[in-house]
Image (cartoon, rainbow, N blue to C red):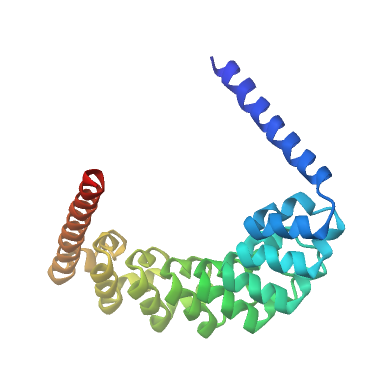
Length: 240
C-alpha cells in the first residue's frame, strides 16, 4: 500500500513538473509573463532561468503580488535597493534572498523587521544592534531567539520581547528568568510562560502564579466566546 501511494505521489509530481515546463515553453511574450506573475508572483520561478527574471518590470509585478518572489529574480535585481525594499515591505522574509550588501542596509532591514520580526535571522549584521532588534521584537517577541547573546541579558530588550509574546521568556538569559518584572510581564501576556520562570524563585512566587492563572482563565474565556460567535455565524449563514 505504501509503495502504491509513493508511486501515485511521484506520478503527480512529475505531471505537475511537466505541466509547468510546458507552460514555460508556451509563454513567449513579456505581456503574457506579466499576466502570470501579476496573478501569482510565485510563478516567477517558472522563468528563473530566462531573461524574464532579469526584467525589472516583471520582477516588480511578481513581488508586488508576493514579496518572496524575490527568490527567483536575477542576482542583479536582488542587489537593487528599490526592488528589494518593495519585496521586504510586502513580506519581510524576502530579506533572505537579498544580496549580502542589502542585508546590511539599515533601511532595508528595518522595513523587513517591521513586517516580519523573524527576518532578523537573515541579517547577522544587525543581530547585536539593540534598536534594530527591538524593531523585530515589537513585531514578534519570539524573534529574540536570533538576537545576540548579550542582548538576551538586556532588561529593556527582554521586556520588549515578553510584552509582545510572553513565550519569549524561553529565550532570555537565565539571569532574566529570575527578574520578577520580566517574568510578571511574560505571564501577564501568556500564562504558559510560567514554565520558563526560574524554578527556585519565581516559579513558586504566589503573585506570579496568580497572574499566570488569571491570564489563562481570561484566554480560555475569550476562546470560548470566539467559538460561540463562529458557531452563531455559521448557523446564520446556513439559515440564509
